[in-house]
Length: 223
Image (tube, rainbow, N blue to C red; front, side, top):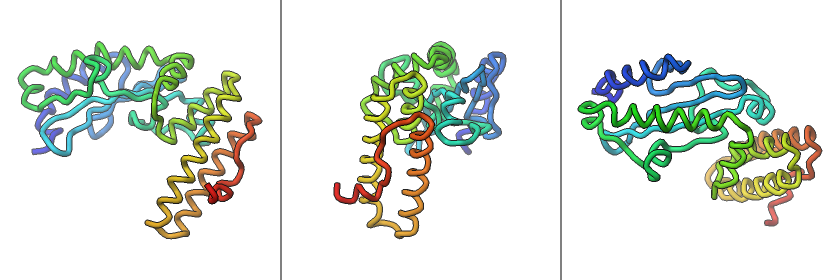
């Protein structure tokens, strides 16, 4: 029996709470999106690959930042990893990563649904501010490459070009180092294609905001 089948009553109960707030559930039943003005709120139930448990991921996508960064519209259904900010529900509510056992949820659905409503939805609504998003990103010790690039665009929108240049140059150096490690595991054709795609996105951002960035990733071979 699949996780979705096992806890379908809980998913339906959560949907009954989220749907009146404007959230729409995807066809697989574990992701909810809500669009409010320039923001997409995202709630996702993630199942464990090792046990009968799940956790909840919350995120927000800033649509105009997404469009500028990636040159396309946001997907019809976004997952938290594609948002500009993301956090686990346990960290929001309990200050630590938290997983809920299926049996516990079935016995008491409120142990999952109540934190989603009080913590997850509240987090999404708080992030309906570019200043709040920047404050959240600034506190992060590590940002995935895609999120770091969106952060650069957001900084540029708010006139912080120097900080954006520092971040984007670090991004290019980090990316090249990762690609140099990857080239020993993959074909040269794939390596060159990946470098070209990344460089194009960076150059478009540089031109839009007049940034001073490293132009050619291949010049970083000497690092």
